[in-house]
Amino acid sequence: MLKILQYGEGNFLRTFVDVYFDTLNKSGLGNYGVTIVKPIAFGTLERFEKQQNKYHIVLRGTENGETVENVYKIDCLERVLDPFADYETYSEFAKDPELKIIVSNTTEAGICYHSNDAMDGFDGITYPAKLTKFLYERFQAGLDGVYLLPVELIDNNADELKKCVEQYIALWNLPEAFAKWNNERNYYCNTLVDRIVSGYPRDEKTKAHLENLIGEQDELVSVGEPFGLWAVEKKGEIEKYIHEGVHNIEVVLTNDIGYYKKRKVRVLNGSHTNLVPTGLMLGAETVYDCMKDKKLCAFVESTLTNEINPFVSKDLAATTVFADSIKSRFLNPFLNHQLTSIALNSISKWRARVLPSFQDYYNTYGKIPTNLTIGFSYLMALYSSVEQRGDKFEVQLQNRVIELQDDLPYLTYFAEKKSIGGFMSDEKIWGEDLTKYAGFYDTVIVNVENIRKGICLI
Image 1: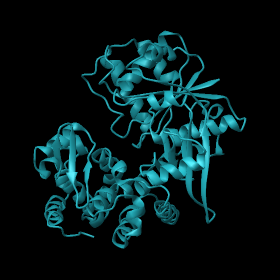
Image 2: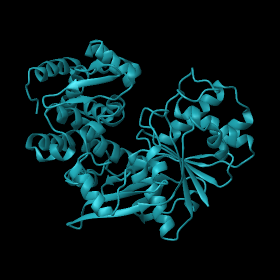
Image 3: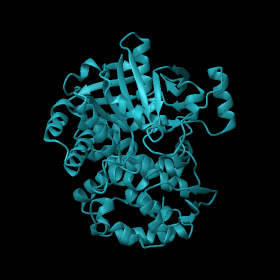
């Protein structure tokens, strides 16, 4: 059996990566077994235990003009581990010769380096630190390396992951032979993933419908769209383990991962991230709500046409075709893609997904982009309205109260009513001082004041 270690038990990986390996198993193209590792102490694996690691996904949307609701039972999960409760079993897996692939999804903020992480720690250290410890145990067991396929939506995600691992090797003074093994025997493959996943249904009507569709109760059921693309950088002998073609999702092995990543991150994720705070503060709850609203839909279309698409590649026509497909995917009524779900870690998402388009527009025209500035203004209005209540950070919107989930220092900063300008100028957050862009700070401050007065900016 070819074994995969997966850091993350969330809806996306289960509705994307695990479905792919399960499809290969059922089509006779492989014998894959996935072991999921819970990457953070928070949360429980009780649902997996209850269902013996079996679950369903439902892909809902349109294909060739026809409405589809396709159900897939996923059987490829061998184990789901909690390393915080059972570190020994997790550690032993590093010494399994059948392990060939490590997949991760720890959000954009997950691939990072903290100089105070200790090798004898686990809870509280970063994912790359945990990975370094895991790989070191594999090295000490005298085993070959693995293929690392992170799906976090940052540029050159595998390169950044490798860089962090190398920093931990240096920080912890690990043997030079291990550093050499890591560099030569492990293949860090940059990837790009694309499938909109709304996850577990929240309303009782949809839950009942899906239960009837599946034929049984499933507390792990996850909903996604039919479209799926996984672009993987070709390294080593990756083609032995990752099969190209359409296997529920389309898989492409490529030497030019940059094009796929830039197109997806800027067009799909960038337009999402720019829309979310605007939609939330104007009363929308889902992406579909936004696209059915004339003002919000026009805002998305204008942002793509004028401020994102022109800077993706020289082939504007191809980007426009992709952007048009994105708009139709946003209009999928089945996904129920909650804006609050997309809003998770909005600060790091804005930096990774929106700032590059903002920079390109500014450098090309010598002025700030109107719609991306409006989206950022709504983001600042949202965060600067946060109130801390116990261990939660909540915002009172016009139609409901929502909880913001982001890095604690960011939430605390705004809960303490510190200035927007101070946040915008913090290079540690953005990688640069955002107030250096002529007119950006002044426009954002005026926009936020108008938002607080109830004035719609779009």
